[in-house]
Image 1 (tube, rainbow, N blue to C red):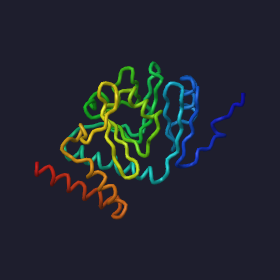
Image 2: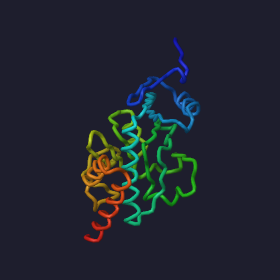
Image 3: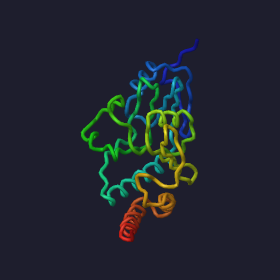
Image 4: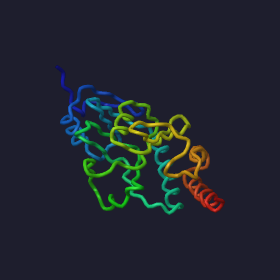
Length: 215
């Protein structure tokens, strides 16, 4: 049997590598060895470990989506706790995942001040965001961990999956923002490519305020 060290494995940006038959102890050891300060994202589901390295365009897309969500939360005066790309894992379920961004909204109060997450006692994030994700490993982890709402952005399309009886079902409406069409998020994301981040966010905030006033 050939054994490789993690430092010998190079995952190019925009690619992923999948390992089979990885034990929970090995997954925990890999998390510890890689540390928190890394660009790669990990997902683990019942023995299958996936390591992916995002492209710069991926990072820009996830940042702008996160910024738009924060504006929606602020302008609707919805309290939240943002846990970004924290690792969410449960040994008893053999599942682990690191979203591109995530928010505690309905359950934000019990997460205030926490710097460690234990899903055996803490709830999963209420809203998670992923960019360019088609991996079954990651979707299985989100579903098993019980994340109620998952946003997936891929090739100019934003898909919302809502957890219903333990399974994800696509929805045209976000339960978190029922009064805002999903298409608007995509429109402002595309606008940021030509106008830039800051002007786009200012324009989006103005649009949200006008939309709220019209309700």
